[in-house]
Length: 192
Image (cartoon, rainbow, N blue to C red; front, top):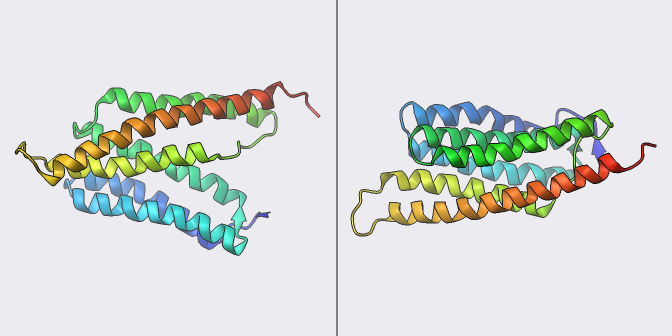
């Protein structure tokens, strides 16, 4: 059951995740404190899972939480992509590809809002895509220390990170296409 409460434990966790976005960018771009940046991404992922779990278990599902949680996910994905691209760890075409999906969805969400629909139901594929990407980026960051030797754990981390990035990108767009289809059905439905 959804509430209009603002002050809840899940909302506090989502807000803390949002505060971590600029901290992450500073860690990656300023001191190149990759270990701390990876730790922050891990904590963010854990609190992302935890806020949903707590919200469902305690009945603290709120409209604000339903907005903050995906916003934090999108901001972490965007910040991580931009940070990694500025460091030269991922190509800019990947940044454009992933952010383009969110821009396309934003157009549909704006049209839905004009019809009084404030969001689309989140489905498993979208969650799986986000998980893959948020799992991949720390691995790519850990792989930044690859020294070009015959074998290193940094090489393994980088390669795994890219595998999850490619899979996550495909799922991200697939989920986006499903959301677009959902939006089109809402927009084609007669107004009540």
